Length: 276
Image (tube, rainbow, N blue to C red; front, side, top):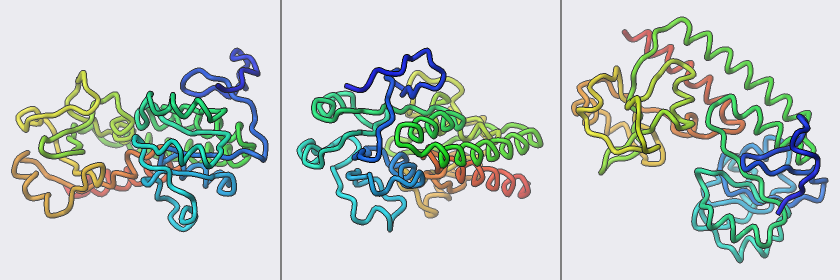
């Protein structure tokens, strides 16, 4: 499906999350991205001219993407639309795209790049992978430097404050949260917010409010369920704890958004600490 050279033991090899080794693509690459945060990263790497398709959820940067054809959603991809765009490279993610859809697309897309960042620091590998494949090593290095600086700022803040247990809401009817194995939980942990429950077999478990008795505060995310400020009073009463809105894109989008996301969380944690 993809190139198998150089050898995987080479530390400079461009290896994706599936273990596939990729070769540099050259300037003729035609990219379809099925992941909103990867679409944003592609643009931040200066690859807008090579991006030929995106999902309807790929909305950033808005003005840049206005004329890029949509190929459906992250899971309901219109295969024939993708085929007509004749991409050379497809960008997918383990959590956001289905194995079955990716397998169908791999029948006619020569190169499928699989991603699966699980922590903020995993974006360093992601930057280097896409930068190396698409000839944007210098821009990738700049993103890496910015992310490393943001990680240091988060670590410095965390050292100055005690960790807090928090609930992070992603859905209602039923109420749902995130497990600690998720990227979202890892982002929050970077500034010392530990998500409840401490252990879960499911990545996005349904919970009861009794299970959240130990948390210090509750966050209502703006995605995937679009919680609104009007929901704060209800949730605060149910949890008997302070409730706050939180920007879901800043917490759940990896790629280049992780840099701003970490600084957003640092500022939010600092401001809420001052309210005590």
